[in-house]
Length: 373
Image 1: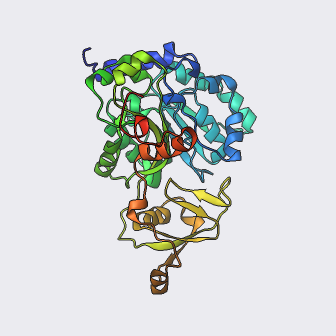
Image 2: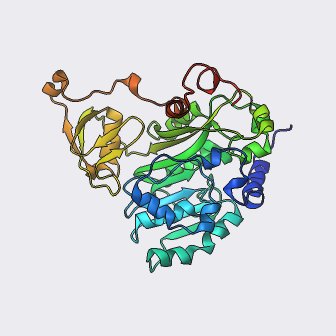
Image 3: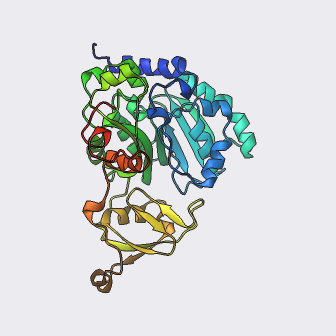
């Protein structure tokens, strides 16, 4: 099969999401409907308040609703029917704002159709949501200015764009210093074959454009983001024998990462941090990523990278920072995170989670030697 040009890929994706798919039940793989893990009660309530038709046209591979959202300006890359935007609208409040941008006209119109419904339901006199028809790799053309957002989110959309580095570059440009890109997407265990990369259905199913997972860290470093922080991961399955044959030995995972854009500062040392509590929905503990969970009132030693992120982001007010005294360093009173304990591989995390439920953690199959899965 001949390689599709970037323009042809974008056109095919627009047709797939605008005309072929009517609801998430039409999907042939679970990449775009991978269930998220447990969510706070206030997030569940926010999602329940979204109109049923908007929710039915939702295609995503995770939960992209981060913590401490009050009064934030949030940009949703590939907002689709607007489900996540309307959920976020309630959480940022009337002093915050949510902008959704999507290249598929039918999806944008679906989102706009229920704007008045949601604003009235949420009790906002002035809408705090805007939807734009445009391309996520061309945010400047859509009128989105430099350093204008606190948070950028994306839910299983970056894989649909051929030039992923440009998408990340644009996200970095529009983020304020201290802001973050919090996003879920699909990643491949191998560099994709030409047969997968040129397959129209696999592109629409979020697999044909999946990034080799190790490339994310390379892109982040080139652009200026801090190293990616893995939050959650789930294995992707394909319910179509023909598509399995095209995919071959490559495996896929849906994963949520957070990338921070930090101001240029001097070196930061390891330190001890104590979570103050108080973030809505996370009063007792804050699960920051797959490696760090902060419990209210409990001191924890963090590495230099984590320290600089907490100190220079919207989370600074939620932590007490203390230097490591010589006594702490020698007494072992504060838990030390060894580098080897940090999980960065989304496949490893997904397999750990799946192994508990399916018993597939033994050698062989999709949790050991790669095979068709």
